[in-house]
Image 1 (cartoon, rainbow, N blue to C red):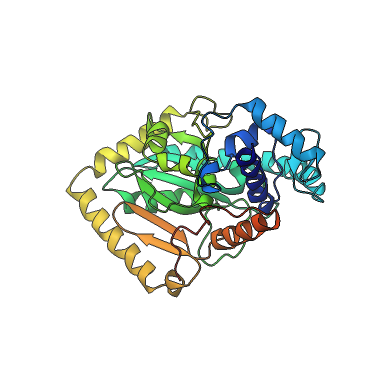
Image 2: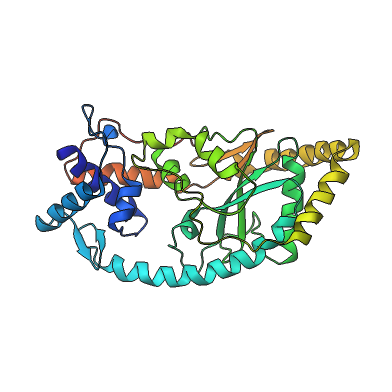
Length: 329
């Protein structure tokens, strides 16, 4: 089937931009929705065996390459060794990540820490930092950000705005609240990022609620289904740290806490507004009561542009040309 073949090629084209070859299971999981490539696509359920058959057919005709169960674009055989190398780097980074992240259990109002970016897919370089998506209790967004930054700073693990490179430091670049889990910035780039989120510290129900509130992901990623139970890496639960966080919330669930949140909001929003980087083109900075996002220099526009161009090299003219999620012009 031409639609499925093109969808598989498009998926490999996208992950080639990340220098990331895919296994059969990963092609199935990340499969770009065929409806984005063909107006008349009516494939219905796509089985793993169908994808396997198409992958092998593409290898036979030379449209893609393969090595030891990994698939990639032609003349990109080096990606196999690169992936193995980066997985080894990621294994060490995960140890550092979890060693610090366990202390976040003591942060008041923090409801979830979800690893994202290169670490989430074990595709890290030595200089990679730790990207995370954070879920915070509604009404205490700015207070939680201060407490979280303080804890990370104690361990020298918080990336600041002045650091161009910050290996093994936490980049707290996206916060949402537990009553507003829907991500409004839809794009292929964001969809592929969010289907790869890895929960390392999550309150009951948050992970499944996040995906229930973001069903738009399947407009881009055809076969994606969240699997909350299959968690390979998570922080070691500490009853003491959990208690510290709850005591902090008990104290701050008061007029004192309201005043602190109001001050924290005004202080942080002023700093964001006064920072020229906030308004640079090619990125997005969001700051309101339900979301804080800091991607002033986003990789998204580059990735989407390269994806669109590389599709055409394979003779694929998509029904829907991909666009960024609404970056500053």
